[in-house]
Length: 223
Image 1 (tube, rainbow, N blue to C red):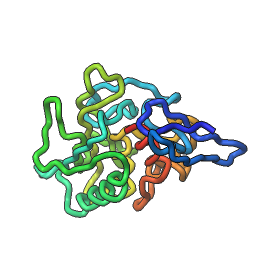
Image 2 (tube, helix red, strand yellow; image 1 turned 45 degrees about the horizontal axis):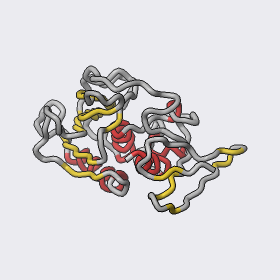
Image 3 (cartoon, rainbow, N blue to C red; image 1 turned 90 degrees about the horizontal axis):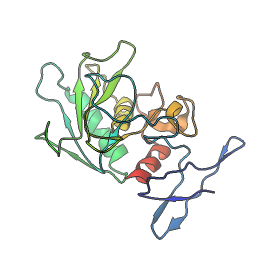
């Protein structure tokens, strides 16, 4: 049974035998054992694309993860084009507080966002149709890939249709992409995109689906 301690970049999924997920959660001196169902933190064996600056709205491929464990976010309030309404802001606040704050990430709201330089606000949430494909509910893209870091992005945008498009499930899903979590098809071992063990990274995702244990373990294993 492979066991990996927290903070290691060399993550390995728990063993899967005869369709039964076998995990081991043993405390060790260096940290807590990592025992996720699958590795879906970018890069994986099934998706190792390098991070680069995306066009507005992205290119449909996940190729980045956030650059460190301190994650700041801002909800666009400079409208009227892409400003979040109060119910949408509540959905973001819920998923950041209920899903991501309990992980090893340090989550905080940045009321005075920074859009350039070496310490940009990590995630910018917007609500509008511009750049969102007709077949998608939302998009996540990198607009400032970190120099000399193959997979990391300093600032990412999450844009969902509005109004009322922000639900806990969809916000959790797109935030997961900004952190670096992939769909099941890009995970290792590969899973169906609808596998419920992917938590809010399933696609399509229900309105009240939370992060889930697998995604939490992947985040804690990376950061």
